[in-house]
Image 1 (cartoon, rainbow, N blue to C red):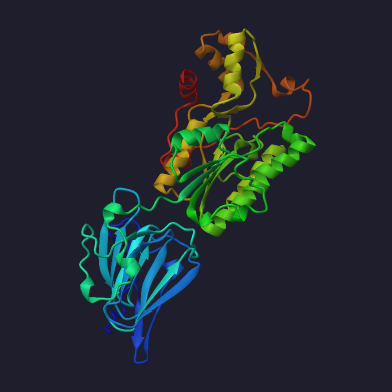
Image 2: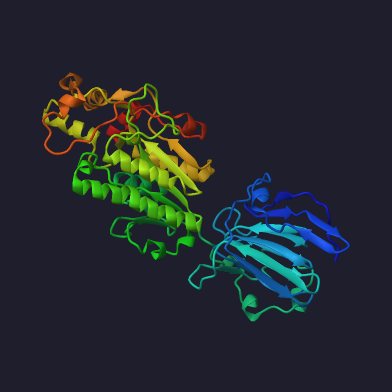
Length: 472
C-alpha cells in the first residue's frame, strides 16, 4: 500500500454541498506511520465549512476481499469517513430534498484522506485492496425509528463508474433491491420546532415558515417544557432548530406571588430544559429576549454586550433565561422591545379607544422602538438561512426613538382621528391609582441595531412599520 506522507492538512469542497474531502498529514518511518484521524480544533478551522458535528460513536467495517461493495445508504446523521488500512473507491449521492438532489461525487480514499458526509447524502464504497479497514464517526446512535434513504448501486441516472463491475462483486440482496433515483423518497430536512405556537410571535412564525411535514408548531398542551420527561419527549436528534416563542409576558402580574412562580417556570426553568436538550443533541436554539433585562438608566442605546440590570421580576427572569440560552453552543438570542403582533396589544388598544371616542392619557417618559412580530420572524429565518455567527442580536424597528405617547398619537392620526386627543402623563402618575402590583419599567428601551444590521437584517423605521401594520 502506498500512502502519501507529509501532506499538509487541507479541506476540499465537492459538487455536493457540505460534502468535503480532507487531506490528512501522515507521518511515517521504519516502524510504520501515524496520523491524527480526527482533530477537532484543527479541522473545523481549516478554512472550509466543516462543522463541529459532535460525534458520539466510532464504527469500523473490516473487508477481507478486493471488490467488497457496500450499498448507497443515506442516514439522518452526519458521518466522518476515513480508511485505517487499505484503499477504497467511494461514491456519494445527494439524496436530500433540494436543487442538488441526485448530484454524484466519487474519489479514492486511503489512510491519508478522509471525507465528511452530511446528513442525507448517500454513502457507498468498493474496496480496492484486501484487508481494508473502513472507519467512520457518527453523531447519532443507530435507531430503527430513524428515517433512512437508499439508492440502487446500479442506478442509471447516477451512472457511477465502479472500478470493478457490479456483476463481478458480491452485493447483498438488500442492496440489490434498493430503488432507482426516480423512485427515491428524498431525505427531508431536519425538523424545526416552534414552541409557543399560539402566541403573537408563534402566529407570525407560522406565517413566515409555513406548513411543512418537517416543521412542528407546539402549543403548551402539545409539549410541556417543564416536564421532567422533556429529554425523551421527542427523538431530538431529528431536530435541527428549536425556536422558543413561549414566554410569560405579564409584566405586572409577575410581581405577584403566583405570577412570580409562573414567570420563573416559563422564562427560566423551561429555557433551561430546552438548553439541555439543544446542547445534548446539537440543535440550534433560537430564544427571544427583552429590553427589560436592562434598567433603562443608560443615556445611549443598549448594545448586545451591555450588562444586565433588570428592575422587576419579569426582567429578572428574562435575564436569567438569556444567560442560560447563551450556554448552548449553537444559539441565537434575539433581543426585542415593545413587541406588536396579531392579537391584543398597545397599538390595537389605542386604535380601539380612538374609534370609541375615548381620549387616553399615555406615558411620555419611556422611550424605545416598536418591534413587529413579522420582523422578528423574518429575522430568525435570515439568521438560520445565512448561518450568521451565533450569539445575541438586537432586533427592533429602526429610526428615531419614540415614547408611548408618540406612538399613541401616531395611531390616532393614522386611523383618521385627532392626535391631540391623546394626553401625556408621567409613569408615576399613570400608575398612581393602580389596583394590584405594578412592575418598574425601564425609561430607556432603545436597543443598538448595528450588529444585526451588519448581519444583513434590515427593518423599517417604527412609524413606517406602524402605518403598514394598521393598514393590514
